[in-house]
Length: 234
Length: 328
Image (cartoon, rainbow over all chains, first blue to last red; front, side, top):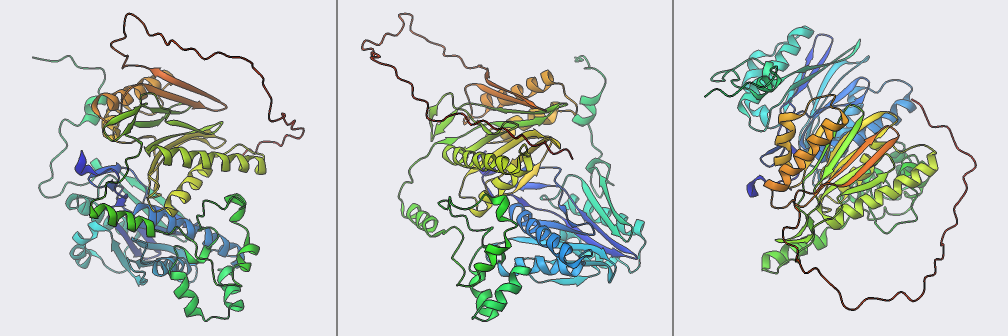
């Protein structure tokens, strides 16, 4: 029990992804929040809303990323009121970058900002540790992203359709979950385009099985939900 | 963003100097939101501070106050421990605390053991703290920290209720707790399970010492959290009735009591539904005292009561105007 270290700060091991497609962006993340070796929340939502049209994927320290996104949501709310129209993705990314860069000694959080606005369309900005901001056609982050660099080099292409982009994101998060101990749970995606925002949810046991992954056997989910208790057979 | 524009105009120093100074603090852009001075009782409650632009612009005239918690003593403590000095032991609530959402509301549960290292300091302490008439909070970690933090936020919520004329919401308590804990960067060792029913429905949240929060249908915290979580994962389902919920919570706490050394004694339960709450103190006592002397106990010297005089300190205030509760 000692090595579980339940007092360790919460980190979101995480796999987070942001991908642009022809008409918008798709953001995706896993759902595992760990404290040391214990999974504190197996169904967390790492895609947080900043405005109606801008979402951010959080990774790194849970507390730091929550506080940063709360501050930026508050600033963007004021900004939207003052501006009189929806905030742009670039402004959201810049606000996050200012907090991340000016407090780089204290914060430990990597973020991917994605959204749609009427000037630039769908955009993805990656803001890793340290506070750089990089505009990219796709961005990956978190501990699980190490396993996805090669995959994206091969699988990403320009001008995908919405369905292709979402399938790509789900496949990528699921591959990372298979290989990274700090990622797991369910896959959550957020699709943002001119029409609005669509959130989707893919439960972990319904994802495609990869190399050497086994079908779930004797799963408690099936046994417990079966009608009535079965008498023990000797 | 308004804040930055005002400050640039008034400052004698250059932008770079401001950024340099600012980067030395926790959150430069919003000094007032982010200066956790525990002795500043004259501050208005945090909800009104958020929209107080006037005060923020006045802060721009002088060099910004060195806000933020000073961690110098924490470094000194670490250094002393490394040198071999034994830190004074403090009262921890080893603890199993749980919460779950059932059909009509929220049920919170806790054990009642408080430990001081290997010793049980209190066999029947109260870990379910009152926050508001419709919100309760279980606390694990250092007993002083959980008591202080929940008391502080409870009084902030009360002031907020007087100011707004409405019932408190669970997310208000959540934000107040989270902001406080984050600003102390985990040194306030309070892990909380916050639950309540407000106008928007039942809510259950967990708050960790570093300031991160999770919103869940069922949650466990404390050293016995793994034992209790195993019970919840096996048996929880949506739409439990009140009795099923209480039974499940009691089972989870018992699992913590019997399998975790830091938890023990009795089970406390608190059921919160819309407009009604039940605090079942010592709902279950699965650890009765096995040996009680048959001769009984007599205490020879009794304290005599010579005189009783009751002086009421506060006169009850009559509230004549009652505002309408906000329906949303």
